[in-house]
Amino acid sequence: MEDMVMIKGELFDGIDYIGVFDGHNGKDAAKKAMETFHKLLDEYLIKSDHYLEHLNHICNEIQQLISFTTASGTTASVIIIREDDVIFCYIGDSPIYIKSNEQVKKISIDHNTSNEEEVKRILNCGGSVVDINGTKRVNSKIVLTRSLGDKSLHPPLTNEPTIISIPLNEIDSIIVASDGISSIPFVFYLIKRIIIYF
Image (cartoon, rainbow, N blue to C red; front, side, top):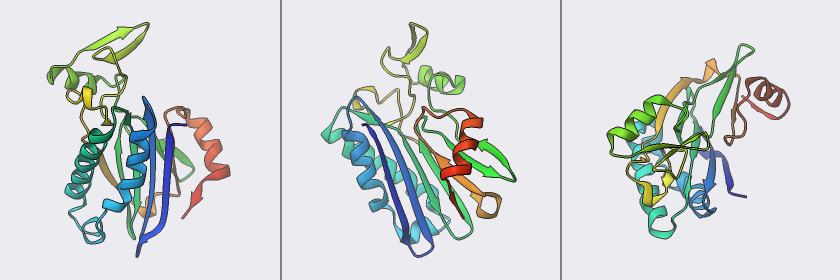
């Protein structure tokens, strides 16, 4: 099993944390990211308006830590629930959904070769995207265009996360998963049965 999950209720006062890490080429990168990400969060910075820079810095630090120890890689989908909003920070294609007013919406954008903007970025960084048996792969190796780890593929891969914030009162429930869960009806089914409600 290369999928790793960390949940920390009350990581800090008024801060809850969820992280999902879907590893590939071994579990070491996912394990390291799972064990490390929440420990690098600074209470003052994550509660402040400087959270964007803070989360980018954490992703850079974890990239270095993983690259020193393993050639494997991982996605990262991190949710930080604050008193008034929810921060979503993700790298790769482990999807994040929210339910609001009885509607389920995917709020993450896949960082993989199905995303034309990501393909353009890979090509602009000097990488290649090759179709192998119907699957587009970066440098003939990997579908992801962003990851933590994968040191032999950085660049053209990057560990830069997408970070968004949504007001807490606009969210009824959240689900974060590995890339195998991609059907909105199935996600709605899951939300009705296993989701955490605020």
